[in-house]
Length: 292
Image (tube, rainbow, N blue to C red; front, side):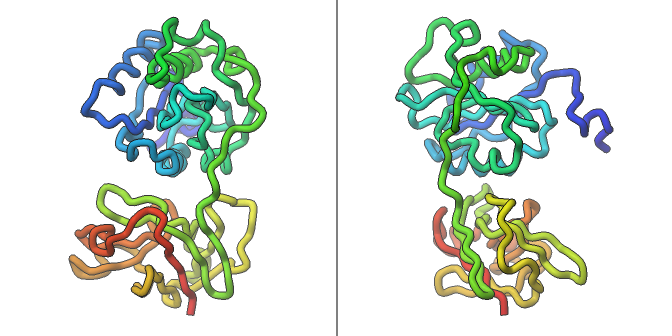
């Protein structure tokens, strides 16, 4: 059970969570950890994932959004999904009420920033807190890891460079409410081939009703606030899947189903199978939730 001290983020050891598209075949992740621990040897490192699809900033943004709230509130988040490395895009750090986010200014932090309070954002320019020699192809090592490690060691974010007025932002995923219809898209395909959609968040309310609020713009309220799960059907192109299930084993092995996943999003799955392969689905494909 989480203690009150842990829940409040008052941990005594600095925590850093890493997310990259580097994979684990090469030395890149290990080198970054070496840089971090050389500067801040007491830092506790958490690998969120290093298997983001290469250069897929949107996937990285979604994965980071899905994970950040479960980390201690003072965590330093080091994100490197950086197809523009060495270009004019800025290296940045953003301090929020739920940790500091360090990485490229390419939209990687878009979804998180919809749900946290930004206290300050800076461009990483102070050479004192970067490695002396900076490669144009490995900012993850020379800029981001070094800066993140100094922050973990207690250096104030504002010391790392000048203020950044507005971080880069990705377009919001599709979430359109019409009369008894919510249109979304496949946002993420996980290791199991489950199709995570942009339709959510949904949570159980009174009288077994599902309450609907948009994930990526939580301050806007859709016209449709509550629905009955037995009245729901999910449409993927010409295939209709119904009703919404409570768990994967609600249908026999090998059968298609839809459910509300642990993050509150509508998900298409195959019990003990791979829905992406079953449907030939890809990220960006349209999905519709229909209410009878």
